[in-house]
Image (cartoon, rainbow, N blue to C red; front, top):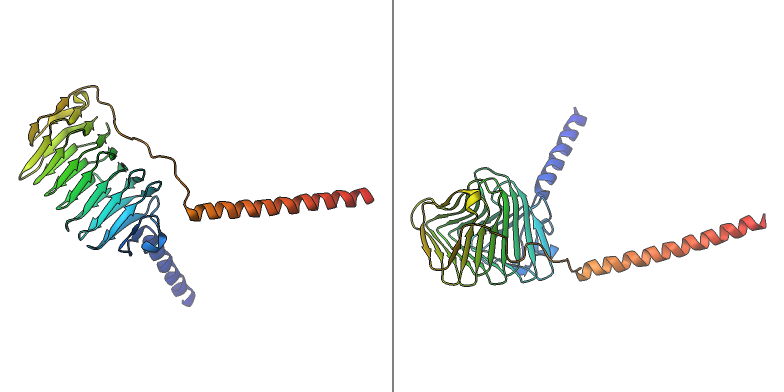
Length: 292
């Protein structure tokens, strides 16, 4: 019986450890995403959720960093900044891929945000709730393989000054607005290559402004309804065929950090020492054989 109790305790401990390993929480205040000391369970990796809960939390993904996670959730007024030259990839999310919850929370993107394979049929690749999202002139957002909606703007404002690409494999709405406003500003471009409804609304004010100097491209042949129940103000360019992605659609090469360079150099030193010992051993073995 004691052995069974011990096995049960070990099983519970291992299960809790595995569950905890699937999430990590921001514990710093202002700092860089790639610093392990800022997280409860280390820097997020593929399959690990990143939780940033706190009004004083200000997180930056610096240039040269490729951040990977299964989900990013910001609440209570937290801020996430993706620097120019940085990349955030969210893949295989079990629910909302990138969530900005009430606070308001803020995301400022100067780099690349990829949200791929959002698998929950009733959730969204990106959801902005009572928060603020700015995609700057150097920013690109790429979304594809979403089981529900590409971007949902709820009681919020999304300012797009860069490029947003919603791929052909989005099941429901490409962009969904409820009590919110989507501003596609001068010099910016939104490409919707597939969806049931490219731009749709749910309730309250639901405004999409395609402002002067902006471009909106909807691949009409791959959507059922281009413009749904929204207030659509078009003062820019509105194309309805031959859409292609724009902006930066792939992450730049990773620049090793100082810590990674240290490990690389240490590895080379160990390899060199190992080769010297192997050569000496081989030489001494050959000498011993020749003396027999």
